[in-house]
Structures are given as C-alpha cells and as structure tokens.
Length: 241
Ligand SMILES: *Cc1c(COP(=O)(O)O)cnc(C)c1O
Image 1 (tube, rainbow, N blue to C red):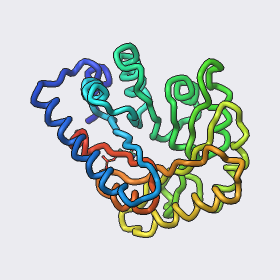
Image 2: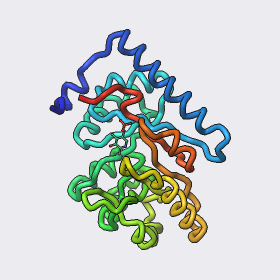
Image 3: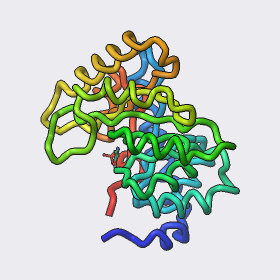
C-alpha cells in the first residue's frame, strides 16, 4: 500500500538510516562515474525519490545531490513544499504519467518533465508555465519497444512531435526518455540512434543534449549507449513498499 503523502513529509530518519542512505548514494555515484569514464558525454544522476520520505531527500540534498525525480504528483508537491525553504537548490524532475488536468501543477512546480508524449500536453505546459520562471525543460518519452500497454510516443511519430513543440517559448526541448522492456537488449542502441538522427537533422535544437535512460538495474549499459541522465531509485533509497 502507498503511504499517505502526509506521513512522507513527517517521517524522520535515524542517524543509522541516514548513514546507510549516504553510503548507497556514494556507491551509485561511483558506479556512474566509472561507467562514464571513457564515454564522451557527461552523466547526471537523477535520484528517484518516489514513495520515499522528504527527510531522505533532505539528507541527500545536504550531501550534495541536486536532481530528484518524482512520479506521483500529490506526493511530489507535498515534498517540494516542505523542502522549498531548506533546500532551494534542488532541481525537481517530473517523471510520471501526465494527466491533462494536472499540467498546471507540473508547470508551476518542476524544472524538468521527462514524459511528454502528445502535443496537447506540451501546449498546456507551455501556456501554464509561469512568466517569472525559466522555460520548462522537457523530454519526449519514446515507446521504444512498441508495447501496447506502455506510455510514450511511437518512434515513427517522434519527429512530428519535435516539430510541433520545438518553438514553444516556455518549453526547452532537451531530448528523449525511455523505459525499455527488460528483454529488449537493443533498446538503448536504437534510442541513441534516434537521438542522434534528430540532433543532426534539426541543428536549430541547440539545447538537444539529454538522453534519459537507465535505472538501478541497467544504468551501466545505458551509459555505454550514450545516456546522459540515469534515473535511479532502488539502488539509492532501497526497495519501495
Ligand atoms: C521508479 C522509476 C525509476 C527508478 O527505478 P529503480 O529501478 O528503482 O531505479 C526510474 N524511472 C522511472 C520513470 C520510474 O518510474
């Protein structure tokens, strides 16, 4: 069962829990930097804190982790609210499915969105992004395995979506994101090829620099295939309830 988001903002960490968390985070950082050695791209670690208490985010932010990813909007908003004053430099990424009636909260509270799959969602985010905030960084989620049940834009439709949203003034189109099927060992390579095709075809996309792929179980393989952002939950925060 999901914990209520209220308890997630109140839960405290013991010192031992805090130390264990920092050790797991350090180990992941080392794994990422080892995998990135010899690669030409820089790799950012996105700590996926869904279902985990705000106190864990706070502890890692104090240790130097900057980017955090959340999937569930209400839970994320509660954490963002409580951490706003203590940890103003956290960069929040929305990585969950986007419902049409939730775009305003996303546009107002996040710096990045990884899960754009339709133009209408991009348009709403653009229109609802507050004037006083910089453009919202967005990634197109690609359904790279063509799975019927999966979110994401079909690979053959990515280019049309790029063209539709690249000139929105309050969005900054940064690249692609995938969640590959476990058995698909070629997904990273296909996504890297698609990413590079778009990069060379649309030189006006000057901020096209982000390939969000790789999670706890496959981050090394993803980095080998050009990932610039790995989204890691379990390996940092432990198993989810
Ligand atoms: C939960 C989640 C992750 C993290 O998965 P782990 O296997 O726990 O590292 C990454 N990306 C997305 C989109 C997720 O929902």
